[in-house]
Length: 110
Image (cartoon, rainbow, N blue to C red):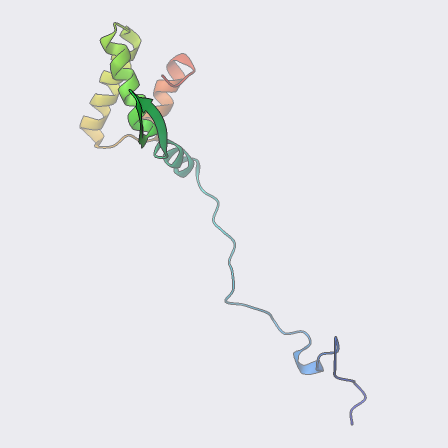
């Protein structure tokens, strides 16, 4: 018999310092700022409309709010909405840069 005991909490020497689970869980990739903003703007939220509650992405709700404010006579909202429309006509999508431009002008979103 060997000089090393094998039993409870005494593993065999040839497996004692095994490399572990090399194919196991990997570290998660940290999301970029663009991914975070996209996730926040595309998260659906509930809001009351009449007697019912509806769900829609935040970005759509913000654009609708801009449109309603523009119809009520808010010139800044109309300018922002037209700028957003012009950007989507050129580039096809709302991205981080247009959101930063709109918020940099007055310090708030809508």
